Length: 224
Image (tube, rainbow, N blue to C red; front, side, top):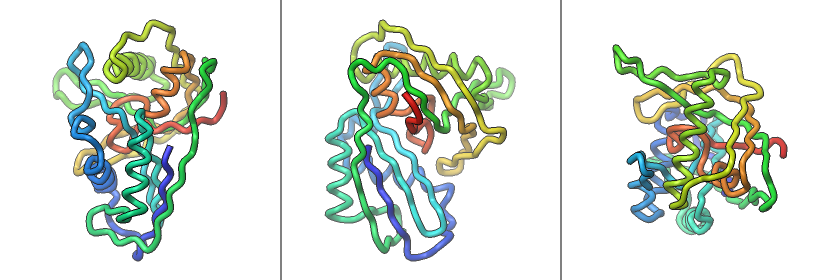
């Protein structure tokens, strides 16, 4: 994982709704075009092999960036060190980068993680998205199916082992994440995931749930 900390020259910039788009544009500018297009599963659904979380406090940005291909993390880090972090017209006074090794051992079969994981269904009448809470069994069904399809798309082979995702705790109130002018709603929650190490590492590198390139799905390990 690549951890980026950047301090802006001005506090309280009114960019909350633009943060995900700005950082997504930055990393796509330094990754192969295939990463922007996505990888297709047998269902035709597209998946990405990278994930990020960006947080903004007063004048400080804290960004976590992960990728299935670790060379992408190195490339983004080198670009920041060489030319700086460029998010639109924001000027940064200082920027630091560091690598954090989160790769699990080959015999790992279970982890406990937390994050803002998004899952939604469509209202049959209005066509609008209904965002589900982690405690809803449909949320678990959707993110489990999504993870298996992503495994197939990114690794080019079926997932044949067991995958169990169990929500352990969730926040009472959801958070709204903006991508351009579109809101996405997720509840911060803790999950226990049982799977083989290849699936577990894939989820740590590419995120859990939908809309992972919109500042969602990024996982922090809190126990094994």
